[in-house]
Amino acid sequence: MLLPLTPARPELIEVVRITDPVRHLTSRDLTGDTVAIWAGDEIREALDLITALPGDELYRCFLPGWGIRAHSGTDQLFEVAFCFRCHGARVWGPDVTAEQRRQTFDAQSPAAHELLRRFRACVPD
Image 1: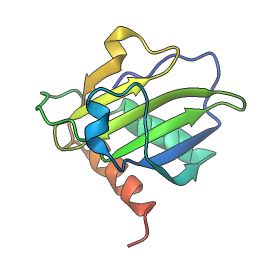
Image 2 (image 1 turned 45 degrees about the vertical axis):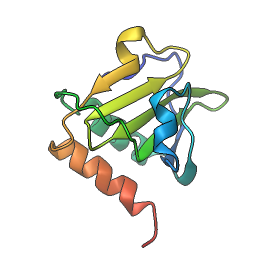
Image 3 (image 1 turned 60 degrees about the horizontal axis):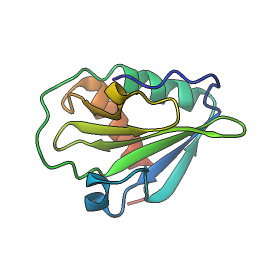
């Protein structure tokens, strides 16, 4: 998956549990409840997993359940919403190109399984 090339490096990532997935069909940003903050090695590991997501065929639903917000020390750099059902992702941010805004990923890939496992681990049973 392609992430924006930003001049600043992410210093923290908010993990977002999306509460209204239908809203994201036409939204201009990511909304939901922040369920965790990742820092340090968690950021590098998460971004490595995301960039390792291979492309796939897009299905139609786009009802994302999870997302991230990447922040530098002073600014929000980008946001990503993931739909593990239709294999779609939406990316928002000031340095996001048109090519990056709507992407696909293989939700059955090992990287996707691990990313989803980490998202789910942020929410107590």
